[in-house]
Image 1 (cartoon, protein in one colour):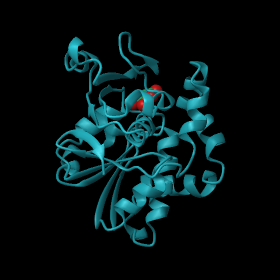
Image 2: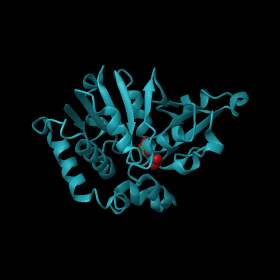
Image 3: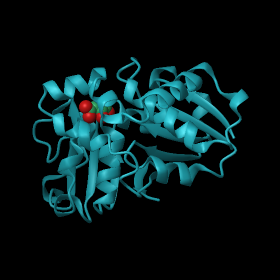
Length: 238
Ligand code: MLT
């Protein structure tokens, strides 16, 4: 398996995403929230890049079946039904519902990769299930979202752990420097995930905003068996 590894969305060459198999990683928190929502029985998630478009997609009469979710600067968007905290996406709240979701990096990455052949959403919580779903691929693009152009340490950890889980199918010599660095981080911190995620830039920011428990939630490696995929621009269970 050949891997193209991007440490941030901004680094990703758009043409390399076209028709490719792309795995999108945004540990804090979009990927973890999408996995939680699908695990809790949400019917579909519509990823949107901006708040205005998302708001227009849900008419008042639909608000019982269609929920608005997301964040800006890590905080809930005023008027939305849900923030981007995965702990809010319980079966009681989202089962059978459509969720229109907009986040700063995660949903932007998914919409950016819209022309991909296959998109798989990966977080630490569904790492093993995602790796199992990707094992047969010959070429893979690992797209770590990062944070508005900056590297997100937690995304690199997850990307590195994914690369390790795909070995020995992964051709080590095909690994780029970004993939090698991520793999070294996985080697070094893979046994102490929560402390590492908590110490990341976004981990500290979320803790300061009062989302401390989201860090523990998003650090539970392999806790979920659901593998959200994107079909015609909509996120659905695999
Ligand atoms: C993002 O998409 O940028 C993140 O998921 C933001 C967050 O949840 O804090």
